[in-house]
Length: 288
Image 1 (cartoon, rainbow, N blue to C red):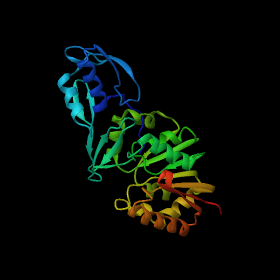
Image 2 (tube, helix red, strand yellow):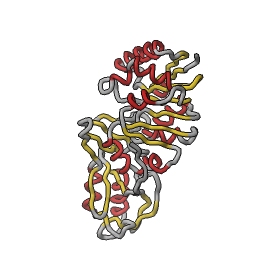
Image 3 (cartoon, rainbow, N blue to C red):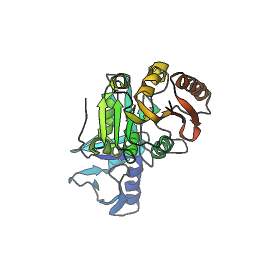
Image 4 (cartoon, one colour):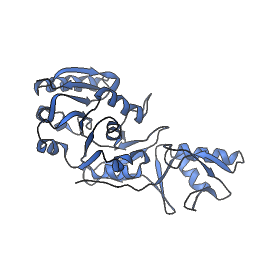
């Protein structure tokens, strides 16, 4: 199943709402802020009703106060309606929501952030993975999430195939301004399905780079299995590379998972397996 086309939306978090409220308190009639979670900035008008929007509606001061008070949420404005960006997945039984940062937002899956946000942000987290993977040619991104990996990989590669298991994740993507290139970039092919099945059906030696960023081991153990790694090895070209995101290598759980991943990658045929702690993962190569 392929997904394409996106519709621009107005999305705000407490960062933008607080800018508007501070401008009001200062007696200003305009503010430099954003309607797309700081992906872009523009001058917006303020009046006694609230924040004037391009569609002629207003976000009232009460609504802006509500947004400002919810520091873990992002809100969508659509045709006069304000709603938190949150989706319950009937496919996985996971609750997904968009979580704001000063940079690109991350998504919370049952309360757990899907990007590193401590001493970094989701965009820098993604760029660290890209720097480690150095994607070229045909790229497989095994877990779409918010699409940041696919979007950044497409800036370097010929084509990116990205796979998402949960349609609810793509509902969040469609409402996230930072995810729109996922739908608009012709170099990105977005598939909905189980990546294990997608890889099994793929031709051998199809991809020159694989970026494997699965959910945590407890949620997706099959994506850390020797059988799956053998399939990834098969679909890689000769001298192709795999970057495998694991998580904090210094944590107790991260140390154990990393050791297991390195062992199983070797059993699957990968060589020159290197820890990349700055990107919270390991890099491995197909050399034979």
